[in-house]
Image (tube, rainbow, N blue to C red; front, top):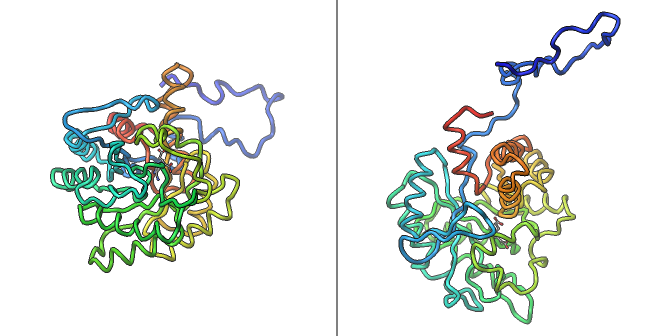
Length: 346
Ligand code: PBG
């Protein structure tokens, strides 16, 4: 093509640098760049988080996440079929729970017929070939918006873990393939594994939100699931301090010892150092969550014409691969899969 060459014509001999290395040689053309390319983004790397809402035949836009909608189960099933067709391996489901169903104890989480369980059953019935991951945490169901049980303003650990085990069982019995505890209570991976095994659910995988930080980048997600209005205080007594790196390694180590099949780092882009350290330290399936705030930033800038949204999307996801991630949870999953299908974009 008409792409610029590294040097149109050699400089006159007296102006030439006596270089033994000219790294630009390997970038001189598209074929040469392809030949030395170290990382590739494929559809196999994608997990698509979707929001579900009660009702029928409705799609409610999420204001702080342009292009993302809350879907009623019928639409979620249709989108699951589309995702499967595009080759996306797995979906992650998040419920928008009616205010009236939220209480102090998050008891709706244990209802075998709750929204998430209905969505899991419907998707696995109609689109059995796609993986379905469900989030284990109480925040979509609690009136205070926290991931665990609260007493006297404190989040209780061991009492919460007992409930999370029941929540994971309810989801697994509905037919989910992967449970993903996102609550950051101590000891929940081991307890959930034991609970699943005792129930004979040996094949249900656990993807641990192992290094999950107390992050401002979750803001739009809390809008999407309706917990931003209810959340009292912050989550810093259970989610990690953004200042810490070594602690992430300890957290991941514990979750692996307790039986996690896969681990996750969250958020994604500001935490690529953690993704890299986790992958090089443990060599286990390692995922990153490009969270709602990261999506919103890219979309907002693109919608203003401040950056090329498509290029930024692909570049950001490729960066996760380069850092060592085996896959990424991203709200861009369908857009990326469509892009990858349409062209061999690299
Ligand atoms: C809930 C949960 C959160 C996210 C995934 N699971 C929010 C939180 O911890 O407050 C965030 C995802 C996103 O921002 O895209 N435990």
